[in-house]
Amino acid sequence: LEARPYKEKRAELHIAEDLVFVGDRIVIPSEMRREILAQLHSSHQGITSCQRKAKLCIYWPRMMSDVKNMIEQCTICQSYQRSNVKQPLKPYPVPHLPWEELGIDFFHVDNANHLLVVDYHSKFIEVRKLNNTNAENVINSLTQIFRTHGLPHVIHSDNGPPFDSASFRSFAARFNFKHITSSPLYPKSNGMVERAIQTIKSMLTKTKMSKGDLNLAIVEYNNTPKENGKAPSQMLFGRLLRTVLPVHKNILKPLYPTEDTVQNLINQQEQQKKYYNRGSHSLKDLSEKECVYMQKGTRNWVPGVVLRRLSNPDSYVVKTKDGIYRQNRIHLRPRKGNIIEEESRNDQSREVYSHPKRQRKPPSRFKGYV
View (cartoon, helix red, strand yellow):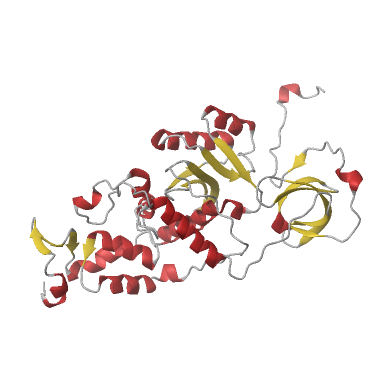
């Protein structure tokens, strides 16, 4: 190695087991740096994430600049852009314990359905591939995850199939957790899950395009430090996970979260809320029996009347000529007209949600019976 570039690190330089170290970080020779850079970017995470990951365990002069240049030249990463629809962010309170509150949802990638589970405290994720999204498959997948991590206190999901089924309610009672649902067609009610899905879908798609390993990509995600300097694996398990990157054993020693972790997350959440809410505005609350238009699809608005407001943020029960729906405030707008009292008084109709119900057919041996 040429000594001049290491002048500032000379106090930390030492040799152990025929390897050169700067502190606990392995010094990578120039002929191996291209390969190490490729391993760093194997899961196609962003510049900051890859730089944090590199800083954990390896070193060479101008390494941060090399990481940045390599990612900026990645054709796969440069071909993807993210778009967001803004509304004022209403984050959930940060849980004080790991695995205390979880968010779950489905996403579709690589011609297959997947179940995503994210821990609201550590942001640790679990992903399970599903043959289909019926209640039995979802419950089996969650049971396997709980067998490893234990039982949560609360699970957040949307209220569509299978989460609105009797089987899932029975599962929640048996495993002693509270199940909280959000309005359909409005995933930002479960914002942390939505952000995790966007990140994971992009990461898995790009990893597949580069013929990488999808499982290793998820391990790398859980092992990458976040804004507070800690990786999800550290906050959940108290340690980093071993990956394909070369690492000194001292870095894999257990590191337990300090008492300031929750406050750091709250500060980070407030900062994200500040940036997110730029250019957005709140919609005024709607009153019971107020006449409204309800959005169906992307452009079709139909007249209706508000029956009641639900306890979940910005959720309303609305009656139209087609039935009774639960909708988020973003899909409703005030309508000039008389308040329809008779439509909203003593209504016993069953609420209709925006998810299709399963078709049921009687066995053929009952054909002809009424």
